[in-house]
Structures are given as C-alpha cells and as structure tokens.
Length: 463
Ligand code: FAD
Image (cartoon, rainbow, N blue to C red):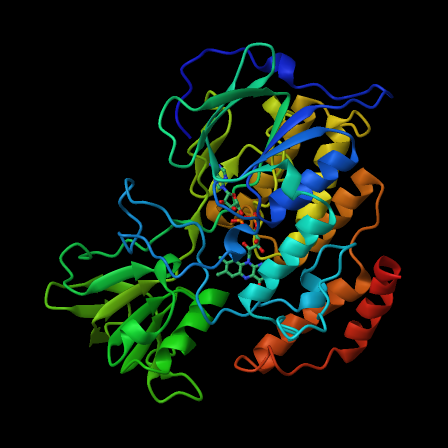
C-alpha cells in the first residue's frame, strides 16, 4: 500500500452507528468476482447506491478462465502486464457444488446440455453460475466494466476519492466521491514464491502456478513442484501424465524422503528444497538431489492493494492485512472501509455473503460496531493468540474448521441464519473423503444423505 501524502485526521471516522434511522450511502465496490457480486446485492438490498468497478469485461473474477499467461512466468517483474485469473484448463472445483453456492441461490446442476452437471464441476460451470447470479439479481447494471480503480484516497470530511481509468483511455482518469469503499479485488493474482539459495544462477525454467494452464509444455521434462495446496496436488497429477519425472517438495513432508507417490511410477515426494546450483541440480533438505528442467512454485499468493492509500492505517505484513476487525473492518476507518473475501481455506461464497450482509447493515445504521478501542482490543487478542499457538503471521486469514464459528458470529450480528448443518457436515465429509480417495474424491463419495438434506433445503429458494 503506497504511503499517503495527504495528512488526514482519521479518529472522527470511527463511529459506531447508533441511530434507528436507516441511511443510504454511496458505496464503491472494487471487483465483480463472487465477493463483489454478492456485496453489491447486499448493499442494494439495504438501499445503498452502489457502483461496482471491474477492470475485466465480464463478471466472475477468478472464474473467467484465460489461456493467456504473464510475460514473467515467476511474477517478479512489477511492470509485467498482469493476468487476473490463476485457473488451469483441467480445473474442477475442490468443493461440492451444494456447499459452494450462496445460501439463497443454490448451485444446482442444470438440465442443459451446455452445462456441466457434475458435483465437482469444471471451472466454466462456476462462471456460468456467477453469471446466472448476476443476471438474477440485476448486478450487471451496477458494474462499470473495463474500468480499473487506480487510487482510493481518504479525503477530508470522511469521504473517499476513487480514481478509475477506463481501459485503453489515457489521461488523468475519473474521480468520484463515495461515503464508503468495499474492497473485493481477490487474492489469487500476485504470486508468492519460495526463496531458494542459488535460484538466480539456476539455469532451468522457473514459474509460478499462476501461469500454469496445461501440462503439454512439461512433456518429457523433469519437474520439481513446490507446495502441497489443492492446486499443487492437482497440477502435479496433471503434469505426471506427460512429464518424465515429477518431484514434489513440500514443507509438510517429514522423513519419508524420496517416497514414491502411490499410483504413479514417475512422481516422488521430498522435503523442501535446500538449494539449487548453476549446473541444474536441485538439492532437497535431506541431501537428496535431482537434475531438473523446471521448478514450478505452487506457493500461493500475496494480498495486494496497489490502489489503496490509507495513510499507513492498513498495511500488509507477511501476508497479514492489518489491523482488521474480524477480517473485515480496519478499526480506525470502520465502517467506511471494508474488505470482503480475505479469508482462505474456507467455503468462500456463503462467507462472502455473510460478510457483506454485515457491512451493508452497519453502513445503513441498522447494526452497530463496537468502539474503535474495543475493535482494536479484539484484533490484538487474535494476534496474540495466533502468536501463542505458534501460528505463522501469514496464516492470519486461514480458517478451515474455525470458519463455521466465524460464520455463526457474523450471522448473529446480522440476525440471519448461519451455517446450515448439512453444509458444515459436508465440509467435514469432504476432508475425510479427500484423505480416503485423494485421486477420486471428486467422483466418489459417501455423503449422499447430506446431498438429500441440501436439496430439501434448496426447495425453499426454488418453489
Ligand atoms: P476474484 O474472483 O479474484 O475477483 C476479483 C475481481 O476484482 C476480479 O474480477 C478483478 O478483475 C477485479 N479487480 C481487481 N483489482 C481491480 C481494480 N483495481 N479495479 C477494478 N477491478 C479490479 N473457491 C471455491 O469456492 N471452490 C473452488 O473449487 C475453488 N477453487 C479455486 C481454485 C483456484 C486455482 C483458485 C485460485 C481459487 C479457487 N477458489 C475456489 C477460490 C476463489 O478465489 C473464490 O471462489 C472466489 O472466486 C474469489 O472471489 P473474489 O471476488 O474474492 O475474487
């Protein structure tokens, strides 16, 4: 976040709305991915006037697949032309569609030959679902497409100046004043890479999974892939079909080095890379080594808000966006600045829905925030507990099972229903199934009773 040049007094911005009168605000939403779409819907439902800025030419964000990759495959060159989406061609969802959808707009299989009926569908089906959602709730009319937000600046008088630029237009851009800004710009675009001793001298090709689209370029190559996330697992299997050898280096691997992966005769598991050398060798931390052609960093992404000028109030440090009350509001700027969708290892869409309901309610004075001091205390308590548990800072927004407690808390704030029990159990069942059937979890499962419960629940939104 660039340093702010204008000195601004911000303490008076933090107010806890207490009035009973419902107020309509002028709100900018940055991004028309899943988070921006549902945020726009919730804000409009509360009577706010909404402008959604989207630099792409359609809604859907990450789910707009493109075969294009960036000129710098590792993503280090700050001047490179950026590609937003990190999807690869073969990507199927890693969540079942019943669990993945918004709470009141089920992600059904459509009886349409143009649609993907599978429970874990391909990426195009998710994009179609988001487009259906946008159409149903007429979000498109709120979106300014091909319009990039280049600066969000806090002004005197507790307003925000949002400067945007239309694609292919030169000039100073267009300024508009808003009461509040909700940042929904996604966090799977700016690569984080592993820093490896010797990497600048290593002669092979290095790239980040952000620029992985299909396995063909890896045919007959020896590939070292770093990471153990869902996409690392998918990509390693994709590549193993054509590569000579795939060596997975992961922090989480213990002593069982050079362990062959079951079901593959060309894939091995290793501990992390220790170093690489100018002759092309990759050394793992246990001393084993391979001569490799490619290192593929499947090492995640960085939060990035290049447009945001908050006078240093909000910063990103070791992938923690701080300080944020409940991952949404910076206490000193609440409720006028907020973030939807920063959490990870979660079921994203229904969580975005709850976060945006909370923001919309607070902005309309129907819901109250604690005082700035109380919010800061809550933030500090979270950071201390993470530190005491030895959780790295970069895992601040990682949730997993704790997402359901968080969702229940948000729902209680908003006075709306929280997690459906079937959704919670489906997430747990998915975790068990992935362990039992790492290769086949998308096509074989045992939670049929949960699917039935979900469909019973969906009837209320379709009848
Ligand atoms: P995005 O979808 O990234 O949307 C952000 C939008 O903001 C984009 O349209 C972008 O163009 C726009 N934008 C950014 N900056 C600006 C700017 N300055 N001005 C104007 N517009 C801007 N989730 C699941 O639920 N199930 C899955 O199976 C799943 N698999 C995934 C696999 C991969 C490889 C990845 C990367 C993610 C996956 N996710 C999955 C998570 C996915 O990111 C979320 O589902 C969700 O789509 C995130 O939505 P978002 O709106 O927060 O961000």
